[in-house]
Amino acid sequence: MDALLIHGGQTLAGEVRISGAKNAALPILTASLLTADTLELSNVPHLKDISTMLALLGHMGVRATPGAGNHVTLDGAAIPNREAPYEMVKTMRAAILVLGPTLARFGEARVSLPGGCAIGSRPVDLHIKGLQAMGAEIVIEHGYIHAKATRLKGAHIAMDVVTVTGTENLMMAAALADGTTVLANAAREPEVVDLAKCLIAMGAKIEGAGSGVITIQGVPELHGAAHRVMPDRIETGTFLVAAAMSGGKIRATHAQPDTLVSVMGKLADAGAHVTRGDDWIEVESDGVLNAVDVRTAPHPAFPTDMQAQFMAMNCIASGAASVTETIFENRFMHVQELRRLGANIEVSGHTALVRGVPQLDGAIVMATDLRASACLVLAGLVARGETKIERIYHLDRGYERIEEKLTQLGARIERVH
Image (cartoon, rainbow, N blue to C red):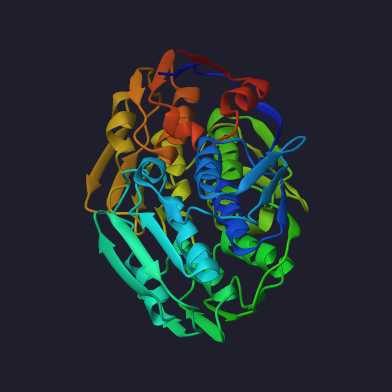
């Protein structure tokens, strides 16, 4: 099993090219199930979750052909297997995204209840209720969701809570439904907008993506298209925090600044100097930071996927700050690992109170989920001495070549077996 060794204390500086967004690429890959034509995708990141999704799609019948760089061509002309088995779903909750498009195109789908990071329940009941409102017959048996429908019908669906994958699943299903579907209380995340752009390029009729109400006029069929996956805003934010914590200067290129307004605002509040262009963001810092309060909420508020990174930053900032998690009920598992590095953190319910300390000290720590992994990397970069991060397979699910990119910026970091 791989681990990362980090020798802390290096000032990071330079440019880093941002990869395609994992959370946009995953639903866009499943859109290949909606058409018999080919889907040409570019800027697809090389990540464990992406390879898992491609393996699942391949199991179902989609032919994926990698091209130069980060290109993938998907051919879903024949889908003989309309089942997503547990063995291929257990490590990745995003596998639920094959349910909507498979059901909409073929009238039947059987998908295992998903797994993934242990950060919260993330129930799929909203996916099921939405598809049932569109006329699907659904039973859950032996750990599988079994859905049938001759053809889905347009419906007005008001979701109880904001759900990103739920919005994406229902939006794909509605693209081939008979009539108009309205998704109320829809997720407004940029990744939802990117999926909508891809679907529109395939011939879907979608309005309102990026707002709380998305309207989809169903069409009989979709055709092939070419689409470039948006930049990863969470990877971008992680490198910007690394610049602030290390007292360095990092420019993130091939980025999308309008997706990170709340993150850039918090970095400025912490004392970092933030500048931006059309497709880049730069953070410069002297390493003297002020603690900042953070409260996660659905987009456009502060993203839950940046919570752990800002907690790491607050660990070495002046003063005290609260970090409140409102999206996932079990997303403070990194707290105990940060304490092993010398952090001063108290947790009460969904809020952590972080008091900055002058110096973190290297230690052996264990990654518990994807973003916790990134937070431990950030802490290790500024800790005194050597930090060893174990179970980094979580990190490989969502960060493309992170140790290579950090090395290019001046970090002393290496992967060991």
